[in-house]
Length: 153
Image (tube, one colour):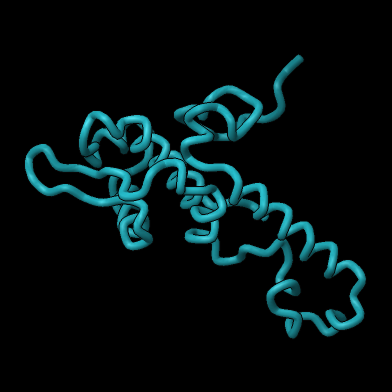
């Protein structure tokens, strides 16, 4: 399973809003600039995050966006489920009718268990954990998370 840019960018947006929660509403232009996300795409993501109840908007000259939920209650699992059409590692886990071997397949259970383990982990990591560095062993989230290949020795 490869996570879409929607999931990755939305996670970055939520991290930024959580970090800046004491500064008041954050304007779209500021988020777009700091996260290097095109404004139109950012607005689409914010709309979906608002509908899901993660974000709220404030109108006016000092308006912008804020977290609606505490950062400690927004998990990577919730974000992933919101943006990913396929949340199982393989289709046959959710849709056994897609495979004529599902009934006797010995690997299907392994895929189901692997999916469950993945979401158990994603459900245990919150936006607050990521800010505090508890959600992963490495450095805090970088502003641009594009993969550039393995580290060079």
